[in-house]
Image 1 (cartoon, chains in turn purple, blue):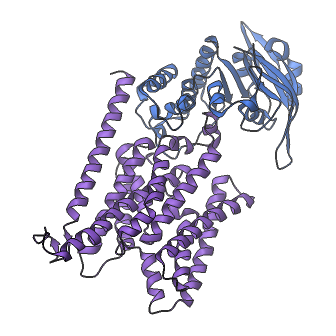
Image 2: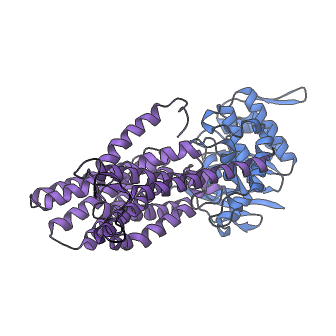
Amino acid sequence: MNARQHYQAERKRRTGLLLGMLGATLLFAFLFLFAGRYPTAGFRFPTDWATNEMTRSIFLRIRLPRIVLALLAGAMLSASGFTFQMLFSNPLVEPGFLGVSQGSAFGAALMIVLGVGSTLLVQLSATFFGLLALLASYLIATRFRFGGWLLRLVLSGIAVSALFSSALGVVKLVAEPTKDLQDITFWMMGGLWNASWSQILSILWVVILSMGILLGYRWKLNLLSLQEKTSFSVGMNPKRDRIILLIVATVGTTVTISITGLIGWVGLITPHLGRKLFGSDSSTSLPGSMILGSFFLLVCDTIGRTVLATEIPIGLLTSFLGAIIFMIILSLKHQEGKA
Amino acid sequence: MNALTVNHLSFTYPSGTKALDDISLSVQEGQSVAILGSNGAGKSTLLDVLLGWQKSTEVSLYDKPLSSYGRKELGRTLALVPQFEQYNFSFSLLDYVLFGRSPYLSGLGTPSEEDAEIAYQALCDVGLESYAERHITTLSGGEHQLLLLARAIAQQSSMLLLDEPTSALDPANRKRVITILKQLHTKGKTLLFTTHDANLAYDLASHVAMVKKGRLLCYGSKEEVVTTAMLTTLYDTDLTVAQVGTKTLIY
């Protein structure tokens, strides 16, 4: 087999695997529609679909939007995590890296404490402060006089993250303990229980656009993981492309977590799994990671809403399962030299 | 035809350090030119300016100002072989060499089967074709240098800029790299490489530019400029150019 045929065959194999995973995820999403605690706990196909308004409402207005949100949020968080990892050439990076998560958390908490009832304003505030954290990290990094550009960004991200963490602590201190503090705590643990079609529609175009841009850059992300001078020498404009992709990934993340709350580990763990399955070439490992992110969040949410009578916050589950998967991946044989 | 023209080039870093001072030289198409000098002489800065990585208005490529080249157009004209590349993701060798095809892809396009064939041929040119599916993090230092060279070959540019191409190599790998570079030169590629090794400069280059403290000490054919007197001035130490049989040896 010559190089052309081999490359063609490998591409076909990867595309087949991608389509297979996508099909499996959609199949599970359909099956999980029947998982829940109504009318009784477990998998139940509704026999009174045509006659019972309550049944239809639970399936179409509660479970379905929740599943759609899990798929969307999983793909978006995974795509952002993957992008951050490539841009910083570091497989241990995720969207919270430049203070984005803490900034968003502060923005959401601030609106909750100010008694703003509008979900949209909480979303906007979370997005605004997430972006502000990114901008602050970037500007502070340009003022640092220590280390290379990536190290300076890492250090300024740590500082900005700590600043927003302490500001969040102050907000929690003054929060009304019986309602606001609980809302903030639940938001920080993440959850899809509030998912509604109107919420999904409010973020849909931003999320689709962000994912579209990141997918468009899927092969060029490889080049941006190299040293800047090298990517420049092969015809890239690394500074411009890095800024574009950082903004896109951050906006996608903050808009998503503005309605799901903080959901950690998806953006860290699924890119690792994606690279294990598809190799390091981001042209297939990025879409692969996005499908895995959707699947991971779908499974976590289904467990969270079905296993106990009370809901388990999804952020707790993603952290718990994510940490276990992470340890397993890094302990597998033949890991040397594979990122 | 003039492949490269540098006209009274000076360069100062934002920190205020003056790295290059009034350098002028021209390189003809198909020449192999060594930029020779000691560590910190400004060789790598000069290479960065010629690459376009550091901005300058005093450099022309094929009689067109470097600053007027588009990014992809420049990528099709010049290819860089850095001294070292750090990887944190384990691409296959073929994936990595395919990166050299970037200047030929449209917008956000991905490489075609034809690009894969060119990349594979570049791996054949450096003798790494049997490792095409291996991960780059498993390569030895010598193979690593060959891989960087393969990526630059896949770029199919008319000029190669090489930063200390053999400085970290053992004798066997050094010989392999020199042989490949000589083959590329024979095929008509214009080579421009930095080195502090006068023997390499004499062996590989047709012309030598000696750089000391950011200034051009001399520039000309190697037979003219690589002399005991010039090398002693360049390195501030006693060096001798001797003829041993058909070989010229500098020690």
